[in-house]
Amino acid sequence: MASAPPQETEAVERLRPAPPRLTTGAKLVLVLGGTLLILAAIAVFATLQTTRLADSEASGRLRIAANEDARAIAAELMGDMTALRVAVRAMGQDPLDMPSCARAQGVFAQQSLTGARFLITDRSGRTLCGVPLPSAVPMPVDGSPIGADILPGNGLVLSVAHQGGRAQARAFFPLPFLQSLIEQNNHSDPIVSALELDGESLLLEQGEKRGPLERVKSIRTELGIAGLVLRTSAPSAPITSSLIVALALPLLMWLAAVLIGWFVVDRLLIRPLRQLRGIVAAYQPGEVLDISRVEAAPAQEIRDLADTFEAITRTVATHEAGLAEGLVRQTKLTREVHHRVKNNLQVISSLINFHARGATGPEAMAAYSSIQRRVDALAVVHRHHFAELEENRGLNLRTMIGELAANIRATAPENAAGIGISLDVAPLLVNQDVAVAVAFLVTETIELAMNCDPAAQIRVAIKPAEQEGRAVVRVVSRALVETDELRHLIGKRYGRVMEGLARQLRAPLHHDPLTGAYEIAVPIVGRD
Image (cartoon, rainbow, N blue to C red; front, side, top):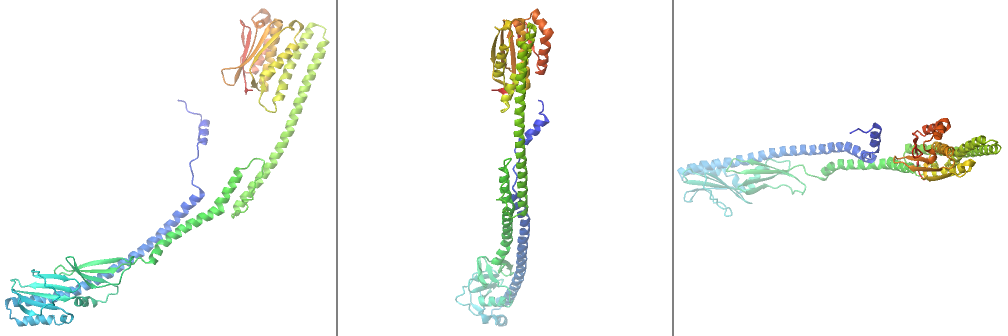
């Protein structure tokens, strides 16, 4: 398949719709928004980093406080339970070992002020040492060597037993006693502490009431005693209104900057330029732009651009007026020239006719008639061309050939007074050069037929050809059948003229010697 010429390819590329482009306002929003969004993200990241550092510091303080509290509780409980374990071992061997009982009572002497109690019993439950536990405190039934049980709201019970089971001890540590152990640490931050065991919890230290946006961080510390765990909680950096503002302010500033930038550019540049574009798009050559709406534009550069457009349109209007005036003068001059040419052709035709009347011989009269027919043909073409000059559509072959045939009949010699010319001409339009050549060719062919056979009938037909933009001119007569007289006239006079007219029409002139027809294809510009 042959490739398209480069000119056609370029034309197709130009006709393709341009890809959609972003408006200036959209580009501004994207550029400004993208740039400021980076700054807003940096500000938000810095705020979050500050909050994270505060959380890290609070976590460090919480870890220190949890270790101190766990160490204080574990040390006290472990010391007490060690003393009880020694007493239980001694009294398990000798139930009457009062010194061991006295040593245990000495260890618990200070704790007893806060309600701490211990009780050592034998296998049957008989009291060996200590005092009975408060009736409100249930006795745990844990039989392990070291056991623990949390009494919610009351305190903690720890138990130890002799290896042989001959003696066992239980110690009750009330809540105030446990609270006194961690109050000695004087925490700077509000902390919530609680002992936990098997789903049971004993709250030791109550913090401040937390709000809905406050966050809490907790640490669980193993005490190393019967699976007891100390859960210590402290508030993290709270989500305060200042933090929310610090996080939201960069985003709000970014949004405000983008909207303000878009509004300013739209008001100062985009809208005035859009108005100016509408005014320029509605401009018609010869008019002067009305830039009164653009004169109020805030941007001085746009006002200067509008003034420039107005100055250009004034210049174009002045030039248009000058061109229109020159066109009017040129039209008048052209009409005058055509009028004078038409008058000159009429004068020449009248002079030929006048001299023809004074001719004495038939040869002279025939010569004058031949010349007059050619001048008439030229005058007919010129008259029709002048009539069609206003519309510039082209010359109508039907009316031109009809008038030409009438003139030929009027100037025919006496021996050819009965000549018949029939016309079959389509309403086709041609330019002046083609019309002159066709008129002269038809005139020469009809005159050749009259000289060969003055009584012959002649038919002139002009029809559209199969090829677009072409028509076929055909002149048929029995006088044009191949004869010695025809060959003599063609070789002596008519042949050279008819060949020259065919070259002017840039087409071959065909002669059919059997039917007596001359045929040639001529270009046309349209149909009437």
